[in-house]
Length: 310
Ligand SMILES: [Zn+2]
Image 1 (cartoon, rainbow, N blue to C red):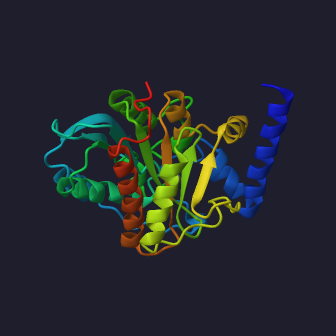
Image 2: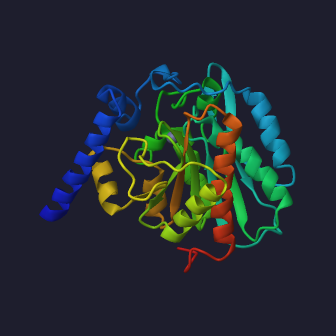
Image 3: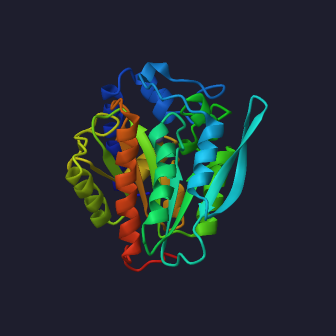
């Protein structure tokens, strides 16, 4: 890397650190943003004031399978904890569903419950919609975290920091799904501490897609975030792009999230960040569904251009 690129990287890292200060205390920032395996197991992070609604995991699977009734269901991995084993499922469209493909990754962070729950809603919507896209849903991406109301998996690892070493079965399952589906777009559903929704694109994500998502959210009266999850102002409310420099800064800080995998295989990624400060879980699920639907329609309409990427 050139000197100049290093200077940029350090500048971007500094911005991230300013974010750390906004996200008081800095200790929390370190634990929840920088650390790959911060806990001994699927700990609850009460310091963050998240109160994830309790999830009956057996019931969740029953609803997920019912919503995917006509679709193919493959088990990509199992997450084990406290003598229980929970599958990570890749739900694939029926053969007649031809067209470009989208992979929805639901619930990497188990305590961000609206992402996992939205998987069921998206599958229900697909049953009745006539979309010319092959939509694949990976859910629950972190079953143990979902059951425990934890960000982490059974090992106490943040799966969304594991896209370098792939020590968690969850990150391995996501890699398997990406390699198997070879999607034109990946959508990853998250929640964060900010007020309002924002969407994050990588350097490969078409800005028109991000714009379409925030336009639709706004049309449906969903408030857009003015600051990101680290308290840094967003130039355009609701929209953030993690470009190449930000990626370098994240490497510098040792952060390897799903964008790493997506970019390495040439696939655009869009991440949703729905506010967990909105106490109404149904409203949060709806925000996820609106955002995902726009992304699916965008791909169904033949975008991004020049797809497939490989
Ligand atoms: Zn998250």
